[in-house]
Length: 138
Image (cartoon, rainbow, N blue to C red; front, side, top):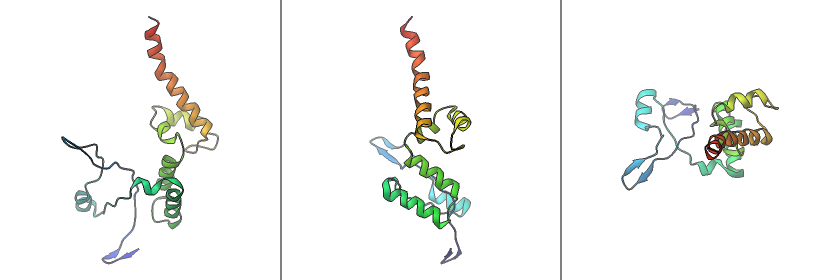
């Protein structure tokens, strides 16, 4: 893209949390420091609320970004799966889940059917519940 000051381009797509303000100060932020990013990498940090990326319109926004080709395709696909596939975000946060899913994925690594995600999540629930049930029998 041609910008006011010459060439510019879009790169990188990240899901970050907003700064949450509590009575005792700021908490819960994983946002980028816009000044630091510009100073160190000459990059500009822009924000787009999560609400703009969910639901039918959000899916269309993500697909339009994919079609435009300005952002890394793999990042847009991963973000789309995280936001629009039930159970995907939870399953990717389970320890060992990626390896287990990759070895059994019907559609191939990174593309999982709902039955695969549900089975993985149910297995994790059973695994986490077992130590508690063993303590009760003592």
